[in-house]
Image (cartoon, rainbow, N blue to C red; front, side, top):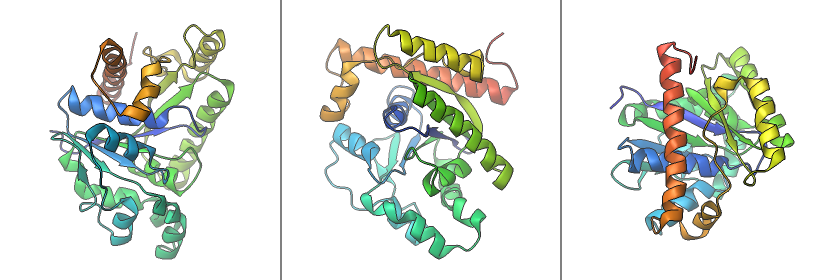
Length: 272
């Protein structure tokens, strides 16, 4: 068990690029297959991460959500146990009121953007990893996630607008560092391919390597798999070789992410 959890926000300022699926599956594989204690925080009022975890785990009732924790100033009672290694802080549509709440509770900008970080401090020594799923917007949600996180995993769907979203994300990250002394590093850029063998997909990935550097772009891609779409309906399953292939894909992604973080913290380059 780590002294303090490594906290990772999964981000891009373009919607529909697969952020939520990556946040859920990284949490799932780390807890199920790698025996790590993981907390997944759903900060999106649409609550897609919450829905997928609940559907996959047979959870039929969610008694409270992250907004109640924000209002009480304590997230500990909101944490739901999914299994022995995975916990969830669920979201609900009520969390759309976060901006109004923060502006009413705090006068100073720094207090507004640092509230999640403050609430997470008592929980960090209970986990190895904490993942935060946020809406794809420059907002109080992303500001709070950035201030609370050690790393950002940037999702790059292989299309031009997603590349621009990733660039904007890094620019805004720098703004948060300059404006609020945020201490957050880029764990890497993870390509999500739209279709197998697509030329545009691979051209976009090559452009990303030019922009962000070869070492920062993952070698393992989240490939277009029909099974990932099916899981949105059925929940995460282990029925056949298609399931096995999808799980292995995310295990490889997570292993590479941990390797990048380890190299970063050890002061070593990710590759020669």
